[in-house]
Image 1 (cartoon, rainbow, N blue to C red):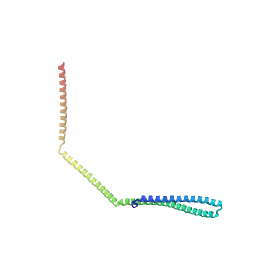
Image 2 (tube, helix red, strand yellow):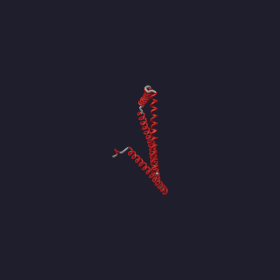
Image 3 (cartoon, one colour):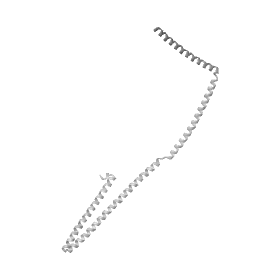
Image 4 (cartoon, rainbow, N blue to C red):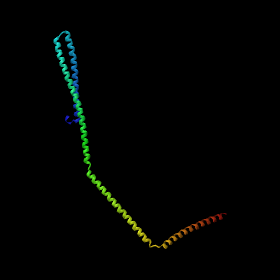
Length: 203
């Protein structure tokens, strides 16, 4: 099953083992301190009873215990320093990985930036814009020429009608208008006559 563990799972297991080792060393240091206390009490008792042989033996054991304690303390200190260095290395690795990712992203961005294509598109757009302006000018010129031609045709057509004919058309329109107004007056007078006749009958 260990073959299928992730990198983070392996890292957590390593950290747990290291912490377990540190706790074991700390327990050993406390144990050596207890041994030292016991040896000191025994040495005091040996001197009290005048047993020089036991005193010398206990003093040697106490010296050895102090050496073991110092060695364990140095081991614990080495592990703590190694953990700090490992944490610094992890931070540096994280920084390096982040910078690596950023470098890849920047490289990909520049790779995707096709400046040659962009320049070609821009030049084509400018050329199209210039062509469009030329087409617009031709179109406007064509419109102006058409308008001039239409005006000339209108002038030529109006020459076919005389001023007297236009005057008669105007006069006929005026007469028709007057006739329409007279018709309205006749209808109004007829309505008034009817009203007057109805009033006389009632009386």
